[in-house]
Length: 81
Image 1: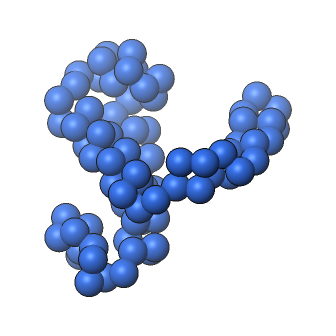
Image 2: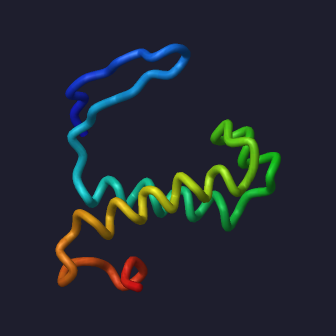
């Protein structure tokens, strides 16, 4: 992973990153593990997300990105519709 640029807007820092599809899949799988293994309280403590739905929305964003960028023949089965 490589940081290309960062920008602060109000109280949020936005990052432009160079990242591989493998790294994206690792992050998506980590979120899946947390969603399947942790209570709401643990999710908040680990991630700062207010609830399971907020964390799941980040996971869905990653899944959509993975499906968009990867060649279908190399896409793992779990990402195929």
